[in-house]
Amino acid sequence: MITLYGPAQAPYTEKVRRALIYKGLAFELRQPESPEDYKRWSPKTGMLPVLDLDGEHVPDSTQIMLRLDVVYPQPPLLSTDPKVAQQQRQLEDWADHSFSWHYMRYLRMVGDGFALPVASRDTLPGEGREPGPSRSPIGRRFIAWIRAGGTWERPITGLQRQLGARMDDLGNFLGSRPFFYADRLSMADLAVYGMLWTMRYEAIPGSSRLLEERPSLIAFMTRVESQTGG
Image (cartoon, rainbow, N blue to C red; front, top):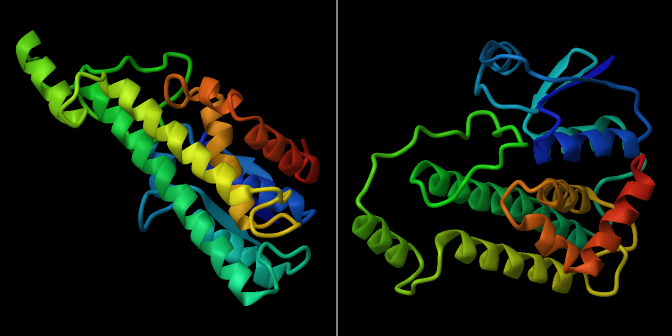
């Protein structure tokens, strides 16, 4: 029996969920309902997702997919070409860290009063922050100026601009191929999809608009969905 433990709204859970579907594996998704679930399901780190693979405890979304390829090699999640496989591994790692960096920066803005949280979306577990101390309007403007690189661009506007630039990078990486670096789906595609899927639901204010402005990425997501259960 295969059980995936993790919050459904997290991109890393979604990445693994679609990998399981792509490989045609039956599984159960169990979502945490309290902090105790994180500790119970992931006692070493307290982080999810974690996969119970027929009794084998596999943490971390990247390690889960690599392990799935060993136990259930077809269809593979990496190219058989070593050079292409390395590129796919690098992009998968970049997608995971890029999302974390942008989302954590947004949360810091929320905590410091520079951006409003999205009320309709749950905070990713373990990534929240207590509100910072109140500041005078002058102090807030000065900090905003510093964070914007010496301009008066609003911090959230700067973050959106950077996020749009990263989406453009993805479009350039993809080029005319149906998937990244290859003609078939890989773990890189699932990682990028997980990040974009979260952006579609406004993980960061304005992210869904940025995504809609890039039809090549929307078409890419549709191709991933066609192979991983819609």
